[in-house]
Image 1: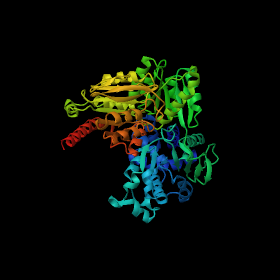
Image 2: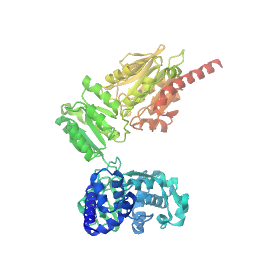
Image 3: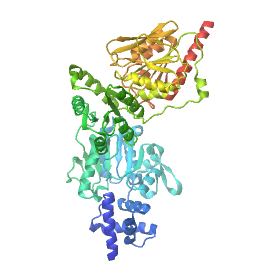
Image 4: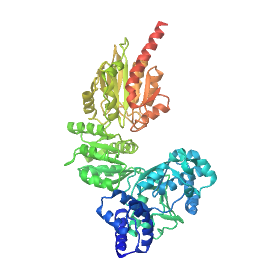
Length: 631
């Protein structure tokens, strides 16, 4: 090379190291030059100095990607390094045989060769049906590599190490003699452009196996160590790391335990449930202490950190994503609602709001729940003395449930055209009818979405939504501003009439309905929790089955636990119509699943279809009743 070309090569080597973490020591300069020959030809550049000048200008995005692609890509093919893959078959895959979901990351996916190779081995060892529970993520820094992986079309040279029977089983003939990966393999693999140097990695779920082959030897030792630690952080306890036999990482300072040549394992039990990692955000040092002590007492929960304000919380979240956030509503500078609306679109972490019982606090909490928070709990206090353990037990239960919640960011209610409203209008009826709805985690959003769909003259609706005392009143007021029907918090002795929605007050009493002439009267009575809840959906539904029978229509919406399934079954046996929200639209699929599994729900429906079906079902029941009388 000329002196100027040597300078150009030096610039490119430094650029690759700074931008991508890819290391080409001086003794590998010839290798780098050879890899960049095609880049020179494709872009019409005469030498490395011209490439360096274009990179320095930092405006040639296509050239930057081409240089990264050329520098980071070896000659790749299917079933590369058979010794390592043999250990993957015999040592790694047997530990995953009984997993409900198999999650594998191919961190340098090499045009898809590695990801599809892994999928074929999974099918061969665990059976083709295992692909339906296998998710393989392939990533690479190069956009052309990802495009090639997604195209899933390969020439003979790439497939020369694939057995003929596997080619017949997993490939289809394509154009120009090329072969196309079958859909069964493609559906198990997803591809995404990603730089391994960009840490922490943005994954919600951990992997059981990480493949990181033929890439670490391009990294300087500090970047190798940092990458190995970052891979360790996103791997389950007892999980596996598969590297290339040519990568000398055994002597690097990292937490992986060597098992075989190119095979490493993370300490811990893969089958042990991982504790829920919680970040506590509250400006009160006392509340942070109370929550930390209470949550840490539960072995299924790990307090990963605390923050006194939104800025500190966001800094922690970007560095180490929690499973659940407990978030104070009222904080200085940036309040909880504003912070929630800021981070949820970018990092949908299940969030439990911590709120005082002030009127303003409760109203803001309702807005937070509509914005995507999954639950609300009352702010605990050391002054509660003997009552604190019971309160913390409830908080721990809610935090654990939140970890399994699906975050729905700002689900807006549909606007129903007037024609549709007329179609939904219930027919006049001579006998009284009643609707009943039960919900828990995610119910605030769900109810806010569907209750405005009921016409003003709909039968009265009784609702149990699991919420702390002091929050159901503001919630009812919020619903009243959205709905055609009148909504308020129920009081003892209230008469539930058409056009009225009553929400059971949170606290120490159950809500039941009793027949009162052509309407229904509310009774609020103290009692022990039923299905760990008070008020309980089961208690309300049992009373509805007794007082309304075939004139009842009831639905169980999103929520944790089993509350409501027994009562819904009673309504069905009494001749009423019964519905449950489906899994796809539920934040937590606990209560609706229990209702489905015990046979209580006649229909399982997406959330948005429930109002119309409740109205139609009641009309169908009335028509059937009239036919029986006529007979």
